[in-house]
Length: 231
Image (cartoon, rainbow, N blue to C red):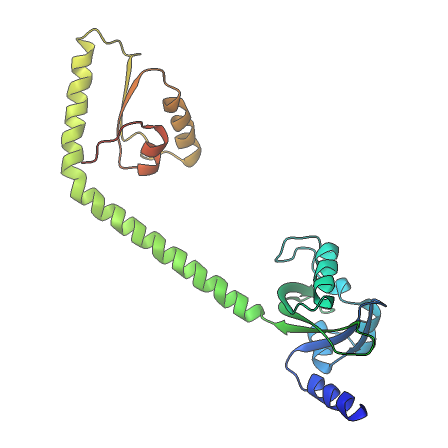
């Protein structure tokens, strides 16, 4: 038994993670390795005294209240589930560190010991964020490029349709239709901000009579139209 305990201690001390042994029944940290001292920025004695929750930032990746998620995770781990999740800690040097946390129930006579490990993934999360931003920026540039090409391709058709709409508008003035019976709009969302576009969508959707719209804004058309003709 002593040999096993010593082997376990050596493995913990040389592991790259910050590792704790936690007694669930007593709500007490039994031990912590050297990397735990380095990650949390304080001595083993202070770690044992303060406990995990003291170092948790108020805003966590799971967006749950800290106390609730800690209790639920420990309860699941004690039931035999091997858990991996993320936590943001604020160490004694006031550094915010994004960690991957693993909870494993340890085999023991008491049956109430958890091995809790923290791995610093701050750099990995920053890299993921940068990759995501790059993907979004690339997609936005591609979208603008496609929109520009599309505009060049259908520009002549739109110009012709615009002439048709203008002619139709003039003829309607000479007919029995009054201006209140038909609303004609040519590319109405051009140069409008989002709030104004939303107001226009609401107004046209609630217009009692016919609305004729020429636009390349597909979302706008889907929001207000009952019939669409593609050119």
